[in-house]
Image 1 (cartoon, rainbow, N blue to C red):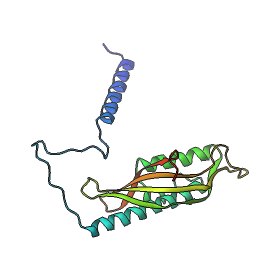
Image 2: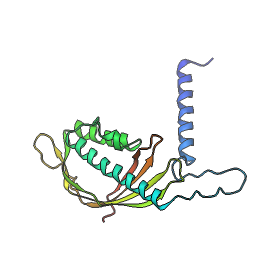
Image 3: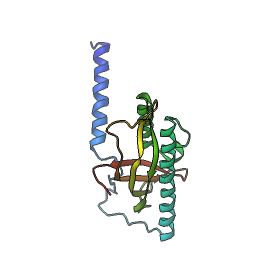
Image 4: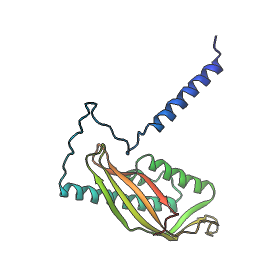
Length: 188
């Protein structure tokens, strides 16, 4: 007869195995699936106008994300209503947690963040359609400071670095930025 505690451990281990198994099988946007018949599906052709419209909408979402993130960070407000207008998970949660963490440590972001994004790819055949964005962020005047005295937090001096992001078109037609990475080791 199993005890309640051993049953909890079994459920925990099963959940862990399922999570690790799914993460290791390539369920992200880089994973591809196709028909089991062995024939490759014909690529869907999209017009230049459709791709340009997607690129424009994705860049607008990216710009909105940066603006909303700066505003939320300056106010130490992880629940700022503009964030979900431009962001989706998992990036939305990461941004909110970073703002909350800074707030809990008595810090906030201030200053100017300069962005120069470009679209590097548009994939309207993906499910969901995606646009990859590359940016050279200039964070030299964008600082993490203490709320109390506005002094720069040691070790957080900004610089110019490469950033990448993916915007996806959601079923409601909105383009939202759902992944992003700061490559601070790669100056631009």
